[in-house]
Length: 90
Image 1 (cartoon, rainbow, N blue to C red):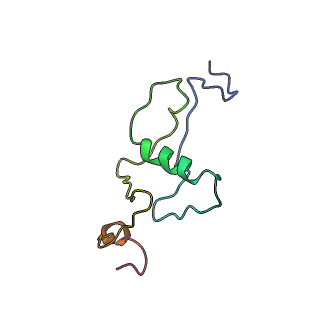
Image 2 (cartoon, rainbow, N blue to C red):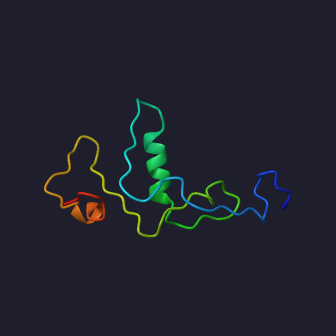
């Protein structure tokens, strides 16, 4: 509707990402939304139909998700490609 009221008007322009590039730590107590935000970021690489409430949930096309099933640990995994651009990284 383009009236600037934030209800999905077609002239709405969003710029930038809410989570900056690099390694981000998401912490908090139980039921504080950690898994919800991670699922939103991971799902953001896929296009969403306009009007379904997720069309503004996007991720960089280079985003990846590394996780273990609940109760299982991740070991012997080379994550250096994810850290190589950081200051003092391996």
